[in-house]
Length: 426
Ligand SMILES: Cc1cc2nc3c(=O)[nH]c(=O)nc-3n(C[C@H](O)[C@H](O)[C@H](O)COP(=O)(O)OP(=O)(O)OC[C@H]3O[C@@H](n4cnc5c(N)ncnc54)[C@H](O)[C@@H]3O)c2cc1C
Image 1 (cartoon, rainbow, N blue to C red):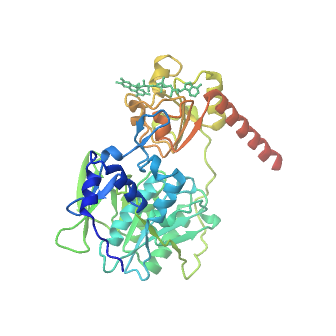
Image 2 (image 1 turned 90 degrees about the horizontal axis):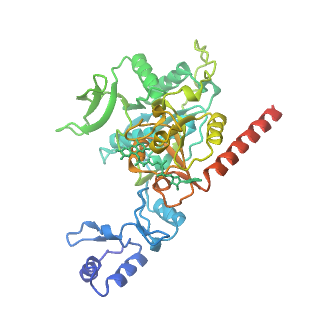
Image 3 (image 1 turned 60 degrees about the vertical axis):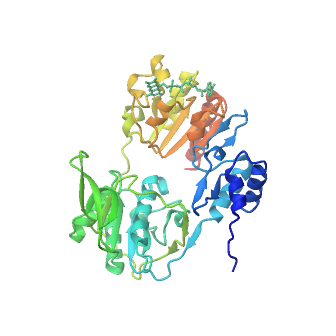
């Protein structure tokens, strides 16, 4: 066994930026696997040097990485940093869980949404509260999905029902599956997202079927003082006007940001199946598919897919055509609205509409703070911009650097070609 030994002299030098050996000691620390921005302080606590946080951008100006990952020219490429971060995650394997915490994620678009990840973070709090007899987080997925990062999201057991009975709006089949899980595993808690397009409906149906009163609009939980297993929750009530504190119910419908998503551990996500096949159901609900709506008529606050124009857009015909072809709702920055290119009700931002789209495409928008405030609850942000250093690119999950007109017309051509190929194949 190696006993980690501290070197007070090196620690002192690492803290003193004026010491002649400061840089040498930091480099040695990096070779030892430690970040130059962090060291152990005299009292044994980890300390951070805010001056070391960030990296030097291509124009020589110091930048802070807004994605949260520490970026430094000395820490290698983004890919190696990501691999290193993944490698440092603690692996958690729960062999014989004392109980189950069942989570039914919405899986919008076939993947875990940020709301689902928050919910899994909440489930982990419940499962890990008692270190001596931990529970397991069981994710139940119904219908096809494309998710592969279950373990990183905090899932110990994964139960996937991939029957076509779960396609589209199928609350009867879903409820039957959840009932079967209840009969076989009797989870200690049921967690669903309190989202109007998914878990809110299913969770209330489950509560009615099991004859239990759910806790809805939950945004935080904490252990009840004096007990080891009791929890109480704070939930939104009175149409969002007040907070209600009550003991945590067994069926929990939680809102977004109810907990921090899991990011320090990786769990086993072992596949699990029911011992009995699900009974065949004669459903009374027939899903006839989605009603086509004109994206231009959708209020910005409710739009799922927004194509938003900024001052970098010059070809307005091309922009409107792209929005029509992609089926996106149009948004705009304030400059564009002030210049009269778009109506006032299309403005996104602090003094416009705060949007919650699943995908927000910012075309030629620099990313001023007032604009970024309005898109902070969007799931995925795509930036199209000529300037690789602008703030929108730093905020974006995916960036395309180049002229907005060229990129939009290439995108439109690609989509039209795909559709034509699909038509020919049909
Ligand atoms: C009190 C207050 C409230 C405000 N509220 C809001 C608000 O609610 N919403 C809002 O949006 N703004 C708001 N603003 C304005 C905000 O500060 C910015 O001025 C505005 O967001 C900038 O808009 P923009 O990014 O479209 O334009 P610019 O800042 O001019 O950026 C244009 C971007 O387009 C890129 N570009 C240029 N040409 C091309 C090309 N050919 N192809 C691709 N990219 C190109 C540039 O690189 C640049 O990044 C507010 C300001 C104040 C003071």
